[in-house]
Image (cartoon, rainbow, N blue to C red):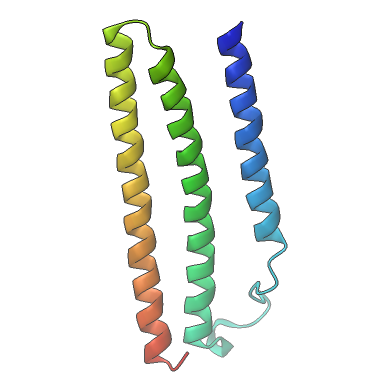
Length: 122
């Protein structure tokens, strides 16, 4: 019963973070005008918009990763056997690998967009 309650509470908290982040992304003031032609968009502006989209996605992935870390932490604390602890340690390593991958991708996208913005005077 307790595990089901913890899972339900974790799912509610995670969904609140996800929906809150999606609502913030939907209310962004600097959304690109899709009706413009691709030839009329300044490359620096386009790079800035792409950077904002990818940083929002990586922020959402970070929230999901944080939720997964909390969940794995609870699993680690409540594991009764060595096998359960070993499985949870593997999950923790996988979560950190995923967060590192998302962080690295955000770094590369941010760097590429920064270079494009500086090259075109943005």
